Image (cartoon, rainbow, N blue to C red):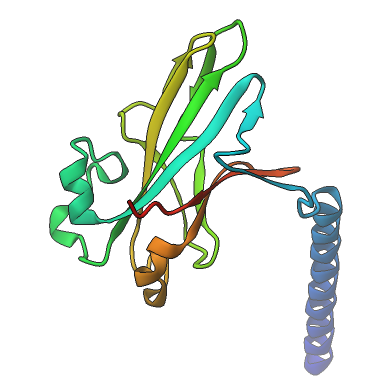
Length: 193
C-alpha cells in the first residue's frame, strides 16, 4: 500500500511538471508571436541624419580613449562620475560620441540626451551613455542647433572580452534610440584625427 502511494505521488509530480512545461511553452510562443524580432533596421549617418518628430539628429564623430586620457580631456567625467579611482583597471576605455540636434519645427522640443544605448557591432559591447555637459534633458528652441557629447565606458570582462579591448578603436559603434518595432540607430566610425 505504501509503494502504491509513492507511485501515485510520483505520477502526479510528473504530470504537474508536464503541464507546467506546456503552459510555459504556450506563453513563450504567445509572446514571440505578439512581439517578433524587428525586421526593419534604420542606420543614420552624418550624410543621412535621422529625423524624429521635427528633430534632426546627426552623428558627428566618435572617439575612443584610454580612460586616463579621457579624464584629462573632460573635466566632468559624466560616464564615470562616482567610480572609485583605485579600482579602475588600465585597460578601461571611454568612448565619446558627438551628436548634433537641430529643431526643424516652430515649437520647443525637449529631448533626453541619455536615451541612447551604445552598441558595438563586432565585439557586442553595449552600455548606456551619459551627457558630458552634465544634464540629461535639453530644450531646443525652433531653428536652434545644439551639439552634445555623450560618453560611455567599456571595461574588460564586465562589458567586453579581453580579445576585443585593443580592437575598440577600429570598431563600428551605434547609438540606438529606438528598439521596437523598428531598430533606429546612429552609426559611427571611430575618428583617428
